[in-house]
Image 1 (cartoon, rainbow, N blue to C red):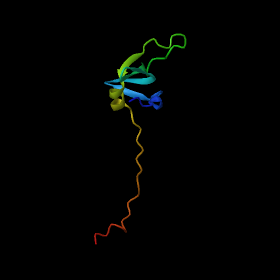
Image 2: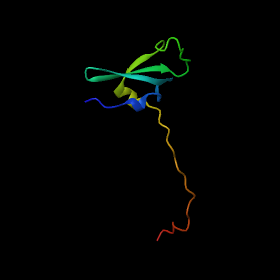
Image 3: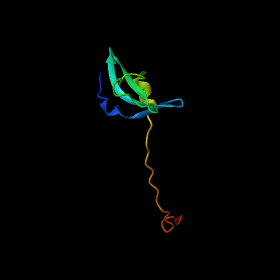
Image 4: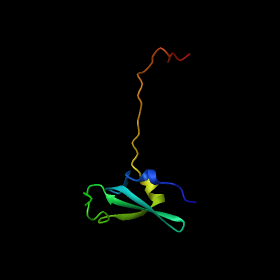
Length: 83
């Protein structure tokens, strides 16, 4: 079953010490491959596919860099009476 993973385009993921940016997703048979470019390289406009690598979509989903928002609250000592 094909799902729409277009939301991944432009997202970053890490493989070891390297960070890649998703450029495209290609379907072949029942599997999907992610085409990605190293984040630290400047992508040349004339040669957009130079330096691209392909990774399995299932692995990229596990390697995504997630920005997590943590909301901290001031302690409420009046509500922590213990009774």
